[in-house]
Length: 125
Image 1 (cartoon, rainbow, N blue to C red):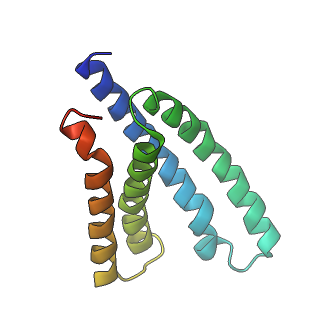
Image 2: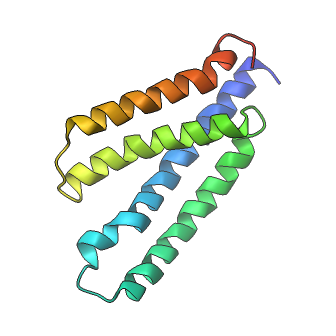
């Protein structure tokens, strides 16, 4: 597989994971704002319905990405995307306040990205 093909797969994977994470974040947290007055089972069923769309994007993303990335790299990529999607969601949709803890968590995730991808960047992995 050429370097161009590898990069293309990684970009497709990352794009699908971003879309997947938008659905996941809504499935996991939107009910806190929209369905807090309803019984928890209603929120669970609505969340489950939204999560179906997450899986319809996440499964192909991981299959495409696994052709060029290890499972560990896929997981760290997904976690970093989750944080990139979750922070704006929590600020703009749930009206949460950003604290320094978000910065520290982001730096930890960046360190994880560095360590899991350093071999690939150096041309070893």
